[in-house]
Amino acid sequence: MASDFDVRKDTKGEWYWVLNAANGQALARSTDGYKNRQDCLHCIKLVRDLSKLTGNVWDLSVPGKAEKIAETDIK
Image 1 (cartoon, rainbow, N blue to C red):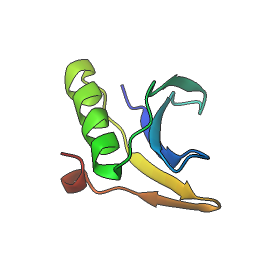
Image 2: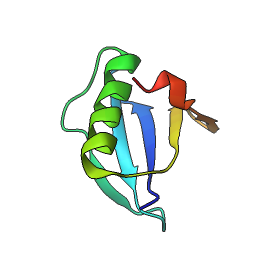
Image 3: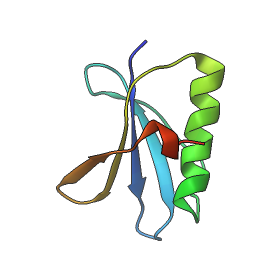
């Protein structure tokens, strides 16, 4: 299943992820905020490994700028 993750920052400056369906609808969101971006990416890796999800991970922390996160950065 190809579903994309978005990585964002909330108003407190904490990182969180959103899992989107192929039609763009949000399916899930991390329940916690992460102080470090890498901790958020690690959680995405765990979800992907357990669920066999495929798809891209996008950094949307800067409004109006979507940046694809490299697979090598998701550890």
